[in-house]
Image (tube, rainbow, N blue to C red; front, side, top):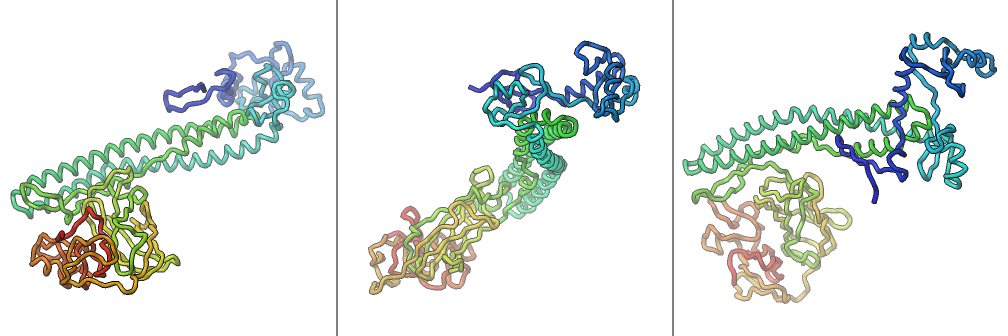
Length: 508
């Protein structure tokens, strides 16, 4: 297995190197800050950086920067390549404030020797001894060659992390005000519910209380979600701020070898934080009352009005054909079903979505439009009648985005010659093509064929005022000609395209 070190604060897991925990790279930025703090303290005894013995340093080269004893100071100012350096007393350097130390990274494996190479295979800094022994034959480059690329990558990540942090902080502000807006929206909807229910008789008061309870529950769910998302966004922003500070210090106060040594860990952490997704506040502000939607019966009364708080998500909603769409005939009625689901993949139990449907040819031209019937239970029936024999596709979109299964390929063939038809008065309602037997009647409208029965329905989906559930002449949705009540197709001799489990009006 792989051993990891888990951070109890943020939950980040870092894989332990093969050599153990002690092989983790040091925090050179923090180490350098501790060294600077010690150098600036008057209680710290500072030794000469150039002497092998512990000789107390009295002066400091502000150019290198190194701490020097008096002997090394004289030699430092006399050498040709360092004669122009600025050498001051250690006390004066402390009074001015020591801000830099020498960027010399010592090999952690051998305990001596300056790091000057980088192993691309092991991702470790190397000294000359490591290069000749432990990492012999490995792909290596000098620190000067590898550091610019690492710094460039860290700089790009720093820019992304800073931008992401600012966005998350802005999101936190938006989420902070979203709870109030949701509460206000809940009160508005509650007032709408009160105004709507007051138009009913006293028997509908039970339904009023039901709707108000749903509004309160929706607001509570929204507020809990807002608090959770706000906490996630704030925590991620805090971690990004820490990562940005560390990266900034690494880029500006660390040597090339030090930056190169910490770059893999810092890069992995920032990329993990940048991949965190935080949802905005708009998804919780879709609370609304759907007045015209059926809500069932309360004490035997048919009532309307449901609460909608979860909009349909096109990527989770699905398109299901209700018949064999690969072998349709010209003029026959076909249908499909769109089942709406929310962003979490849960079924939407109310209607009200704007569904766009059309039949397109292969070249992209529109063959015909489609009628969409809202079933008010989260599903939508799409009915169409292909006019031409050609290959085509059915396009179903919600808010301009295709649902699952769209576009759906359909095949349209022409009606064979010499097929005898069936008229409205014929008793034989079985298609002469040998297709599935019709289960309805071939009629002009439901009102005429049922003798005025209000409960009779038709597959064309049209209704009439006054509580009639079926179609009538010159009313919205009527095909304008005779059609089958079971599948709504206008060809009297075509096979029934309705699934066997769904019957309309009259069964034979």
